[in-house]
Length: 224
Length: 107
Image (cartoon, rainbow over all chains, first blue to last red):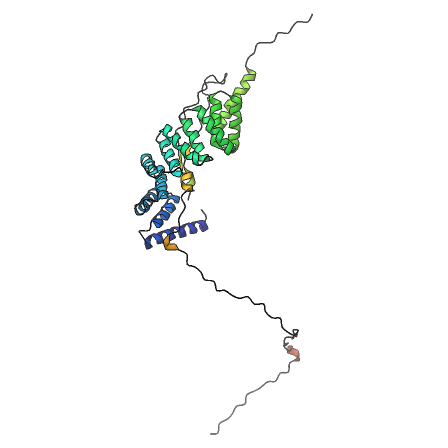
């Protein structure tokens, strides 16, 4: 962060803090301060500020979403899920948060259902599709990995998670040509992905070995 | 300070090692594909969180006085070019030394 940015950052903090001191019962002030704390990665303090904002204004669902995000970051998945459940009346970000909490709790079927609710309202959510690829890869559901990866790739042709999902499926199915193609794109987009380099070599070796494997020698007819 | 957006990531355990035994004939068993690392992220949640305008910090309306812009009238007569007074050159100046006279008071 540059000095100028840091100055603006501190000015912003001072502004939020002043507003809070001027009126401690102002839900907006607590909410704004919580967002600033969250951006400063002060997750615990941010969660407390979101709680105060909610205590003053229990109808503020955005504070509930912020609180849930902080709890996710602090690995308090059950509490995060309960928080998102209180806000998930209509399809929206609360459903996304609920799905993430369920995924991290390994409740995959419920998570997928929650993601689908969110996708119905935001069908082009790349992050939702990437999380679904991750979840199905963990569950080793190759068909779903392929389905979500292809959908994500159609939205974002440079998506690394999508290419990784498709490469994973190709490798599992021993389709070396497809695996080499996807791994080659991954290493171009993410050169630090060591797995992609390794798997590219495996796939290329597999292609080469198909050509060099011993085959019955052709019989050369003797000349008459 | 690191970007908070990059912090919203939880790496999930890698899927079990991809099983392709015998998939690549002629290679030792250790030459197996490696599982990719997938992460769970939730940037979407933070994108919905934007500070709100607090009632304490209502901006004060700034009253800008209306100023009528009137075109300036052109001078009726042509401008006369007046040369600035020139300082006489030192060699042309007439100098006179003034010596103050002492006034003697009568005793």
